[in-house]
Amino acid sequence: RAPASVKRFSQKNPHRMMKAWPGESKCRVAHMSAGDFYGSEKSVTVSGATAVRIEFNGNNGDSNVLKAGIKLLPGEIIDSAVMNVQSLRKFFAEQIDAARKDGTLLSLHLKATMMKVSDPIMFGHAVTVYYKEVFEKHAATFKELGVNANNGLADVYNRIQNLPEAKRKEIEDDIQAVYTGSAALAMVDSRKGITNLHVPNNIIIDASMPNVVRDGGKMWNTNDELQDTVALIPDRSYATMYQAIIEDCQKNGQFDPATMGSVSNVGLMAQKAEEYGSHDKTFEMKAAGVVKIIDEHSGAVLLEQAVESGDIFRMCQVKDEPIRDWVKLAVNRAQEAGQPAVFWLDSNRAHDAQLIEKVNTYLKEHDTKDLEIHIKAPEDAMRFSCERIRKGQNTISVTGNVLRDYLTDLFPILELGTSARMLSIVPLLNGGGLFETGAGGSAPKHVQQFLDEGHLRWDSLGEFCAIVASFEHVARVYSNAKATVLAETLDEAVGQYLENGRTPSRKVNEPDNRTSHYYLALYWAQALAAQSKDGELKSRFAPIAEQLQSAEQKIVSELNAAQGSPVDIGGYFQPDFQKASAAMRPSATLNAIIDNM
Image (cartoon, rainbow, N blue to C red):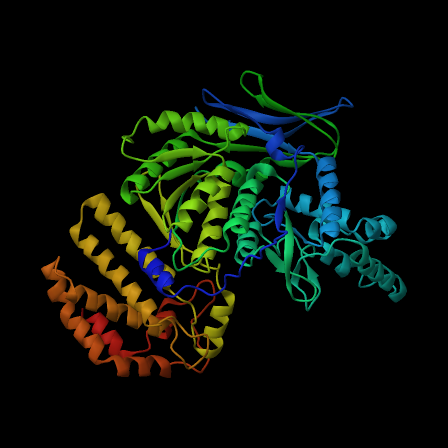
């Protein structure tokens, strides 16, 4: 969810990235109508602890175990599903032709980074269907070179570099000829000629689809101009909710960040829940036959799927304890926030039908009589949420693991301009909490600039907000009044930090991360000194606030003076503590105030 201080700031200072939706928008989501994971999914809840194996029985009589010893706990939900590749390829061909006729930009939205077995395969089929003539004409050459379409068109370009010039140019010309007669492709970098189909992880659905909505249903074309797009999301499981928000925008226009409500999320993610834990149980089938999930104790076949050669089979799991805890967290959040909570579950989807039974059972364990709790299919939940957003109302989404990932990018990007300012609170099963925010990995460019120039441009806003939530957790769990005051005053300080523009500059010799930390400390001390709920904290921090304020010019000068030359922190992933501390605390004046607290 968006921290209160961040939300207040974003409404007073709305981001300017939203583009208007045209009156006659051709944007749409295209998904399969049969043969996808959604349509083939089967699901069952096991009653007792057991172990299962995934076994393939070929039509030719061959049999082999794909994976054995998969341990299941009582009440665990398992499901199996198949993506039929012939249906997938037919879908791609039809949509390419439709986009060509409509004059819309063709774009493919998958998550090859997380669904690292299934989605690269689907991406590869999109590549070979779109560039069908090229792959058929040069099949022998591509086989000899080891071209793998799952790695995108870039793999073709990389592998043909050492061919004789005439042959290489022939292939490159054939690729260019495809663009003349086919649908136009969405571009990742039009200046460099990088298309949507160059690399599987260049366009990632949880980031790309929010941008489509933000940009008025458009993506960038070869002329570096925005153009209406048809977004291909093959599997129906989550495609329909994106179509719902597109239809909402086509009817009602673009969202307004200054007035729109928020959609927070309670996600089912513990113990590798659902699709995001399926990598080791996903297989590309080598032949036609039947895949069975067999109880290794009883020999009973729990689930089975007919498959054809090339089909993608996957098995998912979700354990009972995380589901029970997820329902509890949803109820708690609804009680705390006083907002409707919506379970995004589709009764027509096999896996969700099993979940709905458990949700209805576990809701009875809680007092929900004054709460507004719904169970809606994703597209209906999206419509419900969008209607409330436009009224400035807040809604809690209660979702599985994939939708958790998608929605915590979608709504923040529209609302705040980025998901990096969202707070992620992960309640742990034994009562603890994990508080995090968008991090950008190890931020290598930030570290490199710090080592080269002594300037750290990393913005610690996320850490500041996570500390607020940490204090709130301590206050709630331990009935600690001081923690409540610390949380409230830190949130106030974060608001001042944003209002006064104290985020780090990207340029050397301008205020960086260290200066932003000084100002956060100043604003926090001032808020503690001004509050009246805790006299001890007030008297303790009033003189510190005065010291920090009176030394402002000197502290900022000392911090800026530390920039402009290389820094040695004694390592990259494991820096030397003393060296890193010296680099991060270069102001003797600030250090003296902090150390004497």
